[in-house]
Image: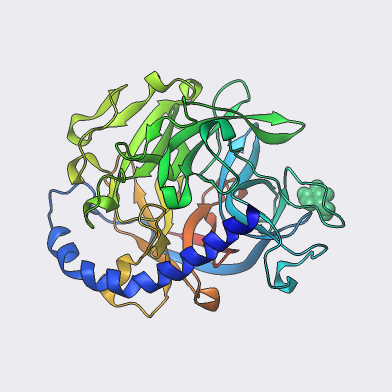
Length: 405
Ligand SMILES: *[C@@H]1O[C@H](CO)[C@@H](O)[C@H](O)[C@H]1NC(C)=O
């Protein structure tokens, strides 16, 4: 079964790349016509305060106690420690300790995993290791449940862990049945068991709360515990029933008081001009109800330095919804495969957001995909620097941006 999973992954990547050119030519014209509507709340407003900065490339991030190729790694805090949640985690060959010297072929994988962050953004400590010798490998973080028809090929795209109450935490995840499509977005309860964040419960009759066909995929774009309020916020892409090229790219928002995150009735949904509605999931889709358009997965931080929120994301990204590569920079005729690391800011999480500022351009490894902006705010509470990571063809690359005014 595991072998099936990796076959699926590589087939997917091939078709993604093949679709890219076709996708661009199809979209260029309608995008430009539609996106110039000045009343659209998903469009940039104002000036981005980030204008003077230096970006340093630090290197690739790896665990010090295991070995695999991986993606995502969104960070979140639980009981004063920070953890990363990864997506597909492809184990290296038996005994290999450096992914750069891994041998070709499939050596096992899990669909998501969790690691502890250290003071060095290039070093993480992998959790939930198996008994492989001489090098142990990670077990899956969000468990599949055969009673819900799930198996070990199912994806559980997760974003940032967040603390709820009483030392417990939560995680938004997206149940992905591969060829059978996306099932829905759910919330897991996460508790520290033997010092490791562990999923102890998944809510909903079928393991999710928001069916993807009718409801935004809350949490699949970003999740953020806002310490300036009692809330956790989750951004998600359009329902899968929205299939037109423009509509499928809107991103919607919900929030809940962190302490109420296990109670579906307490969730509040952003209805755009009608504000927040508690217990009333969004049933209308489009620009007016959305908070962003055409963004990839990313992460939000509050910046003490600029006194605003910063959203970290990339210009090229990988969409779980349409299984295609998205290149917003088609407007500027980018160099092929070029991939910018972008920061946009806001003083309110509902937006509006400023235009993006580019802080770095990644060089895709072997022409692979670059996506998923990750922030490491715990490394500098002053906000004068922000350490950022992103996925580059199943490697995690790390940058440090130093701001000045
Ligand atoms: C990995 O790093 C952590 C944090 O610095 C440290 O406590 C641990 O001993 C390291 N493990 C190994 C195997 O080096």
